[in-house]
Length: 325
Image 1 (cartoon, rainbow, N blue to C red):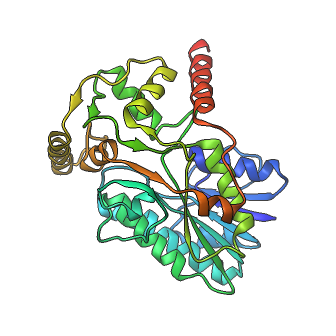
Image 2 (cartoon, rainbow, N blue to C red):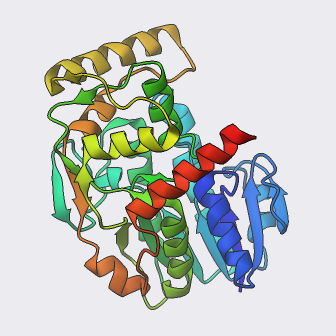
């Protein structure tokens, strides 16, 4: 199959493109900077119609991962990459006669800040989603699913908290805060959360390319299906990286207020760095969020091959190898 992967310079995009290449697909990747993969590469902005049209031409399927993934920053950046980028991809798919589009979304599009325990993929809700990233991704998912038609099958997949070796978004930030003694447990630390090891998330997206068509017009949450207390997850990630685990506990209310204050300071001073805490992060670390995987596994014909314990061991080996070099 000829497959376009947008956003292949990120950890998950790169792993997914590699998975497609390894099984023999003809892969094109589109992103702003070189990904260094052995395939056709188009460099450009995902919201640039000309660049996207070049990348989409001749493809049988598109796997759309490109997005602005962050916790702060002006709305315009999220709207450009996540909303306009998705609309540009949709327009290009329709113009080029692409038959399948797998749109990579996020469980946060349906998260209003309260606990999610054993639920399925609820509807994306931009009005209730928390933070600019989540709201922009909610709009993008709604746009993508609205484009589902007999000519273009659209399937939305929401990988949940993807992590693995080389991850700078989740693992990198946790490890850096732990190393500097700025990683407390928010609330009790007992809230159950589910995560997804990167190889499992990539395999699920490859499976989604194959399933898209018979399965379409819906959203599916992908995770390892192994919910653990948040304090345990943080501790295991820190132990794998060889840094001290979380220190101290902060009540959720205090953490939420501190996050709001930090966001205000960062916005007022237009800082480009990531604040030490945000309201969304406080909610994520203090509330349960794990998902029923039965529909996902049946629809995709997929199951995670790497358990969490094996994932932590692989992460530890990666850090040991990096430190040794």
